[in-house]
Image 1 (cartoon, rainbow, N blue to C red):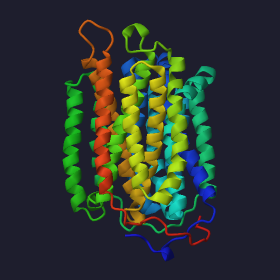
Image 2: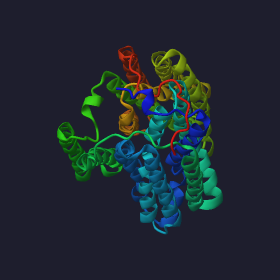
Image 3: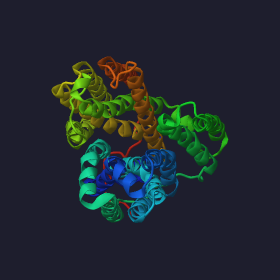
Length: 478
């Protein structure tokens, strides 16, 4: 149920709230991918093998996924602003640990600590939903959603540039500076003092959720290196499955569950989560496959033969389109509701995947398809937090958005591995490169899942309103 207007205050100056949250989201999103081009440099500096240094990426990814829902729930219970400040303090600490660490273990430890800030997006969405009017919140959510794609696309070229000039340590120090700026903005401008949910932290659920996500995600991330039938891979997958069963039992019985299963069964919630899963599979597959096509040699018959240094430029249309789509979608949602923009975003995703899949190694097809995917992702990801904010009580916004965020994490991990497996299967025996048909299967299969997402959109119930009502102008508490 929605809170009444008497239970909350709405800021008359939304830009003061939106701007620091956008910068915080960009800070985290950039850090997700800036590390990728400097992994070889870290390996050379620490003398580690390729399998060990990969934990610089895997550790961040797993800790982020495992702790996102907990961050959202802590925000619901303790206040979203103080929890947001706490996780960004950890994020900055992690950057400093990685920057000053002389060993691979210290760099990995710092990245794992940085992953604790994965709750920045669900907490930011929840703050906007409770602090701004519906129209203002929708616009702000669109802007923040756009930073996810923009930061991810900018991270590759920016990370390489900074590392070339300052080394990988300079990259982490730059992240620490951005974190400090984010913290100042959050402390000074983001309101607090909201009504908090009653209850206590479900630590048993948090531990089980961590194992449920951490085990399989580690196995999926490292399965290719370890072997899919290796004992450690199978043990992690089994541990995740067992933990999931126990998690469902615990969450159905405890008084204050980490994940409210009744809330997740609401139509709009499962529609939002399934839609996020299907759309993200396509987005992640494309962002994995496009660099493959661009960098494979021309003689392979499926590549453009472009070097790593320039391959990232093919992702710029997606980044720019995402940046434009987010705020425009926020305005569109405020005027037309969630269904039309979500439909447009899903159709755009399907179209972008088909353009690239059918276009093959054609630079124009890749650029156009990437732009369509950027528009689609920026649109869809801007709609989903609004849909959630309109469907759950204000005091549950953090946890609800956290669940949606980890659904996207899971789909990203699964998509990348499935896409890679199709390419391996599609490589003829004795050949070095996959066939064009393998790429077409990847893009076509992802597009088919986008069509499934289209079928879910008419199921959205549009009568709920859980975000702030029209403005009751007053200074929100600090």
